[in-house]
Image (tube, rainbow, N blue to C red; front, side, top):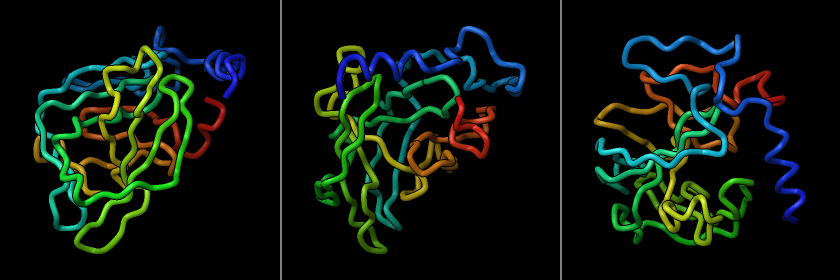
Amino acid sequence: MQRHDIERARNAWIYRGQKRPAFALTPGPGQESVWDYPRPPAYVPDPRVVEIYAGDWRLAHTDRAIRVLETGSPPTFYLPPEALDLTMTRPSSQRSFCEWKGEAEYLDVLGSDGLIPNALWRYPKPDAAAKVIADWLAAYPDRLRCFVDGKPVRAQAGGYYGGWITNALVGPFKGEAGTAHW
């Protein structure tokens, strides 16, 4: 992607976390609004226990995740490579591009129920602001079973997005019906 295309994509965002829009839900005690998250995204260490399962097989376990907080989206959890059983993965030809992080590469996962295509992704050479997650892995909770402190997370709608929805979040969330203009 050309530099001017990246700048155009970045400038297209209407909401940037400075002011919660009128349609955003108000968080209750112990909750966060995804509309208070910034853009560009923030990279926040999270000491809670994160586990990921491929079917019945545990793929990952850590208490050193990084949550990527970005306006309108549930956080994406990135885990250090050593937290995953990488023998259960294989490279995929899938690639995508984020205007804030750069080019992502994907991994397929072999789970107890068979092959799960493009279930994980990482940024091997991220843009400077995202260096903290270089080679760390994120998982799609609609393809793998993901848990935070023993509680299952729900997948962000839209297929492309990899946000983890917990009971501590309020939206609405990017990816749901009617959110394409965000």
